[in-house]
Amino acid sequence: MPKTVGIRELRQVSYVTGDVTADGSAVLLRVETEGDGPIDLSFPTVDLQHFVTLLLMLGGKAAVNGRFAAFSETFQTQPLPLHGVSLGVENETQGVLTIEVGAAILSFSLPRSSLAEMGRTILTLTGASAVGAPVAN
Image 1 (tube, rainbow, N blue to C red):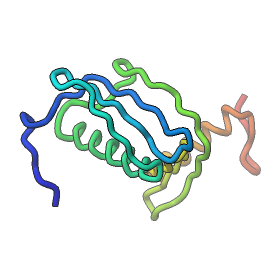
Image 2 (image 1 turned 180 degrees about the horizontal axis):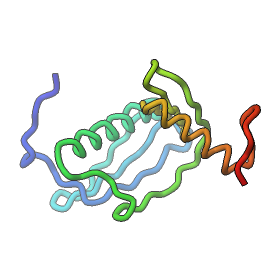
Image 3 (image 1 turned 90 degrees about the vertical axis):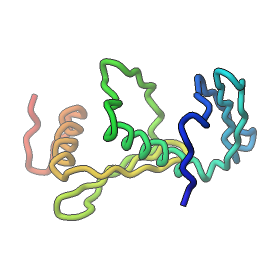
Image 4 (image 1 turned 90 degrees about the horizontal axis):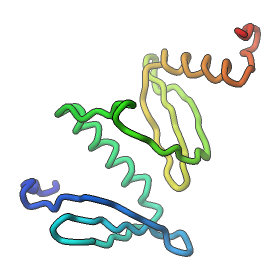
């Protein structure tokens, strides 16, 4: 079990930059802190998926514990190059959206009704139609 660290013991991050090694085997991060300067970190690219998942899970926990949910009016996002996407069914009520961005593959659980809405949106945006279903113009 991880040791609980008091918030006063942690360094406040002010800026993060990064790169990858020439052979793509590691992700390099420079974490800037206000009082202590830069901290350089490196982790294997194969661990990227776990690192991103951890950050997203902690962000979800922060949103539940406080009022820190992302709102489109207050946060700017940078579109990521999508390498793959799939939709699946987890059980009778839950679906799964899986996305692949570079070396990371993430799966998101969502109500099956959301899958139907996504499907309709994709059909509308592409001008395609489901078998036997008319396309709205």
